[in-house]
Structures are given as structure tokens and as C-alpha cells.
Image (cartoon, rainbow, N blue to C red):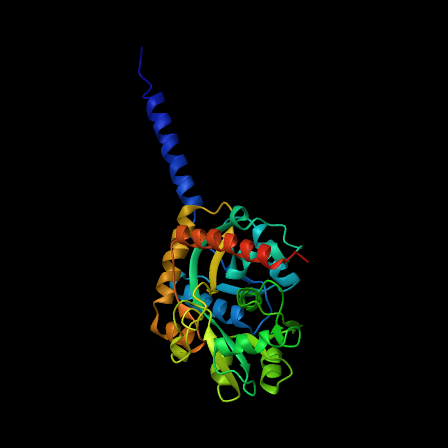
Length: 324
């Protein structure tokens, strides 16, 4: 019988090679189009600043635009939920705050599960808040201020800028540990709250470092909320140094995505974020804003959120906080 030169094994091998090549062509290198970083707060704040700094560097490193999109509302829940429900393709990311670990304990609008509905990618920065008081008060340190407040139950006032934010948790923990009975005065933003501490309309507030530095001559900075001092306020003690050894309330920001993102994309983003944070110009901008740039592995970031979710739950229970 005359051979036709036709070979089934050869044909199957060729088909398999074509399939592999087509698959490789279809799997475009990431990112192949612009990436959105959702900020669950309005423009001009600390979250917006951090997101835009990181987005600019990621655009340079990865060759695609990283666009910051502000989606404020419902204490951050609108923007956060939007990301949780987005496709896990790496093109919609979230600038996530540490306060998300405690959101469900104070905000009844939270429907997501932080550890189930998001993919941790990398930490971006950490920063302290600062306990500041009106400079006319007869207290020079934390111990004296606690004594002052305890002697005036229900008369001392403190500012907050929204339940669930780190300044809120800072003061809740402080009041609980110090056994202070004080009156909350809510504000829309940190500038208004800080102004009223300076003018004496309220007695104390936990402000970002920049607020304390800028107004150093107009108010009294008593302590920072982290375990280490701020480089910008090196003479201001930590809460632990000031006589509250169990006190710690750091702030941090991270990049997260929807649940189900591929490990390859997470690694690409993680490496690029780490390189961005190593940039001297970016680091200098962060430090001048009172924060310390710091990357992490996805595993370490998940552990951070897991640990602080437990801590916030304990604080909420002991302080009698209910979701509103």
C-alpha cells in the first residue's frame, strides 16, 4: 500500500503546538491596559496622597497608567465594596486602610468579609497619630492630662472624624484604658477638628503627625500612638513611654485587590510596589507627610489584618461599641 505521508501522531503534535502558541499569545503580559486604584475617600486627603504617589511610580515601572479613582461614601464602604465585587484580573485595586480591620464593629453598612473578599498584595506605609490638647489646659504630659480629665467627668471634650477611622479607635482605646468619661464632638474632617482644639472649643484629639508638627506652637503634643517615636516629633514620647504600656494604635495603608487574583499578578504588583517605596524621592515625600514607606509580603499583610481584626473586636466589646 502506497504511503500518503500522513501521520496521526505528527498531526496531533502539531495541533498541540498550535494550541500552546495560541494560549501564550492570548495570555498578555500584565498589565496590558490601565489599572485603577480605588480610594474610598475624597480627593485631597491622606489616602489620596498616598495612592497618587504610588500610582505614579507604578506607572513608570510597569509601563501602563495606574489611575487613582476616588469613590467616597458610607465611611469608605462604597469604594471598598466596589473593589470586592470587581473582576480579580488585577485591573481594579484598592488603597486599603488599617481601619478596615475594625470596620464591621462600628459600621452596619459593611457587608464584605475582609479576609474572604479581598486579596492582600502589599503594605505601603505606616504612621502614628498624635494625642494633642489645647495648650491652655493645665496638663504637661499624659499622666497629668488623665488626672485632669478624671477630675472633670462628662465635661472634657474630644474630637472625632468618623466612627471606625484610626483617630476614632485611638481615642476609644485611650478613654477606655485611662478610664476617662468624656464627651465626643464629631467633625467632617481633620482640619476642622484640629482648629477647634487650637481655639479651645474641644480639649483633645488624635491628629496625623503633620497636623501636630504644623501647629506645634498652638497646641500641646503629648504622645504618639505607635511603639516607636515619629521622626518628625522625636521629642514626643510614645504612649507606652508616657505611662500606658499596653497602648498601641498604628495607622497603615496597603494595596489590596478582589479575592481570587492570580499569584503571578500579585507578585508582579508586590515587586513593583517594593521598588516604588525604595525610590528616594517618594520616600522623602512620605516622610515629610509623617509616614514611613514600608512594603510587605501578601502573607504578612494578611496576618496584620487578621491580628488587628481580633484587637479591634476586643476593644469594641470592652468599650461597648455597636455597629451603627
